[in-house]
Picture 1 (cartoon, rainbow, N blue to C red):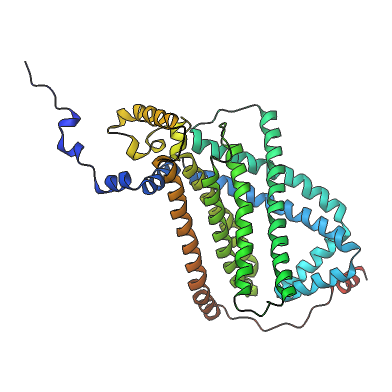
Picture 2 (picture 1 turned 180 degrees about the vertical axis):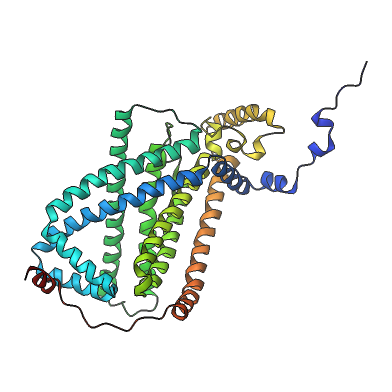
Length: 404
């Protein structure tokens, strides 16, 4: 009789995990980040982010038209507010771009009804397409190949999601603005406006309110578009991560736009490219947060994690790939027996979220502090700042010249 074939347990190489494997088994947060990144790459999330970016950028223009229409209705009967708007345009948008914006604002006031209708219809079309691509991307990361549903039902659901997302975003912005204004009013009321560090505290309060509002919006998106019956509380760690990263991207984008807007020749194209790049990076980070949320150990315990090794924590695999289904069952039984109380599988997402969020905040702070003077110095050397131009006429004078 021949000798039996050596099993994988007799192979010394199979018994010795690599250094990265040992680190993944020891540190749950590291294993979580690696599994999320693996899922992101395997499901081609960059391509999905590109499709979301296209329709998101396309939806920006009807949104601006609709905002211009609303703005036109407000300014039509408020000439003093109109003068303030013109002054702000003159101060912050130099060159011919400011003149064009003044004329566009005048046109929006004159044809606010037609602009509003076109903007509303365009926003419905582009917004529905954007929500549809976002839903398919989230379900692809979570389920692999989501099943096609009813056309009418999916579009009706996407329309409700679009309305809810717009309302949540508007409420988040309103809470941030009102909270910041109330804090500034209180500081002025008690006479602390000249106290050192007050502006920093108010800025931190604005960021904290923005993060809180964005967290609620992202938690609602992740829970509604995942395709699974999960609670918003279950996706809260991923929503917090997405909100913190989104604020960091906004800070970096604000620094870029402030640098670009100081130059006339690069202001228009640089702003458009910057907005497009911001949307793409935000979509990529959003999908990474979805992958990070889908690979939480709690979803592996409930059988809702993505299929394959990425859905199972490394410490719970217990050996070869063939043992993974049993590992999932054991993990699910352990969680059920413990009544889903706090253990290593539930504290690992919190630790991972804290580590990644702290890294994002630190990275954003370092980039914002270090790159601003360097980029500004380089920008002034490469492209000289134009000479200041004389003040431009107000909107009513421009309108008078056009009608005469």
